[in-house]
Length: 161
Image (cartoon, rainbow, N blue to C red):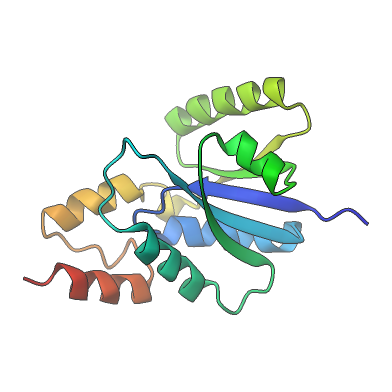
């Protein structure tokens, strides 16, 4: 029997409630979900790769279907490596859809057995993004609504002066 394996790629810098919601909604659909942190050496992250892996492992420690990993390079190459035929992407708005549709079509052209599964963000989470959360952190804003409690507590400790 073939395992239905999906990769959820992202920077997760930091992971948000929106990310968690997408993963929880994908659990009943797949045999294995690999949450894969994409590492871009040209990009500056607010939190270390180790910290982001720690958060993901903590948040999903009781879910047997979830693996946490990281990779460099193209997501489609990583999917080939781990034998995943699906990529999970969240859609918050029309701009997300336009961007993600283009990437999905390119991935399908290059690797025709790779399908992108889009889940529409819940309305109450559609404005949540890691980019916004990072801006709030840097500006000493309240991020408690946007990130899971464990992550919030950890960020509070990490950013105390």
